[in-house]
Amino acid sequence: MKKGLLGYYDYTVILTYCGAVLAAGGICQAINCRFAESVGLLLLAGFCDMFDGAVARTKARTASEKRFGVQIDSLCDLISFGVLPGIFTYQYLHGSAAGLASAVATILCALIRLAAFNVMEEERQNTTDRERESYLGLPVTSDAVILPLLYVICERQGRCAAWLFPTVMTATAVCFLLKIEIQKPKLPGKILLIVLGAAELAALWMLGGGDLL
Image 1 (cartoon, rainbow, N blue to C red):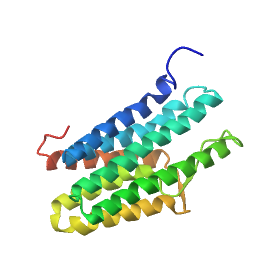
Image 2 (cartoon, rainbow, N blue to C red; image 1 turned 90 degrees about the vertical axis):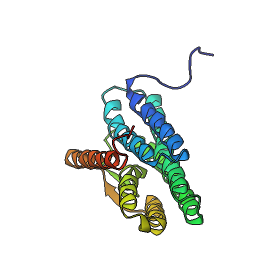
Image 3 (cartoon, rainbow, N blue to C red; image 1 turned 90 degrees about the horizontal axis):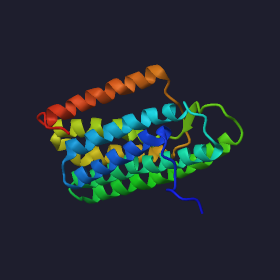
Image 4 (cartoon, rainbow, N blue to C red; image 1 turned 135 degrees about the vertical axis):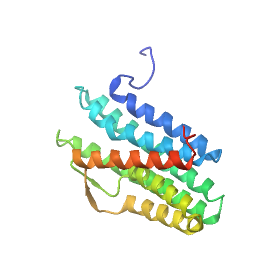
């Protein structure tokens, strides 16, 4: 039996691991009802996810490294964009029935979508070396943009939080499973997402009175 640790630890997976660490921190902050900090960490995890694939493609990887990359990325996405938003929703809605239902839907739909994605991606990589150009179903990473925006809106319009938050989060979760083809964002789309994420971080900073992170 070979000595050492299981898994891979070169630079191609560092951003993925960083995303998982940030998401774990976001979960802890949500449990402690530090919502602005939790959402801020979710956004940072989203930034990590946006660039981890590009970093991984800079290295010639073995078949095992590629398969590991697919699995570890999806597991990280489940934590970052499934478990974290689910726990956040439950805590933010004070453990209400609507919050619980929305949290369960978010986690379960993210889990199913990511498992299906792994199967489809493995089949695709067995037939082509080309980079993926589209997704089937709404990517779970959408929560990194939708949840912060929703949180800011609900904080500024507090009376709508009880119905708007669970409605939007549940609808987003259902969209994870819809068989709709969504084009993978190219450079202009990524720039737009970065700008939107930066604006959301700024809004969170103002909501937190400058104490964010």
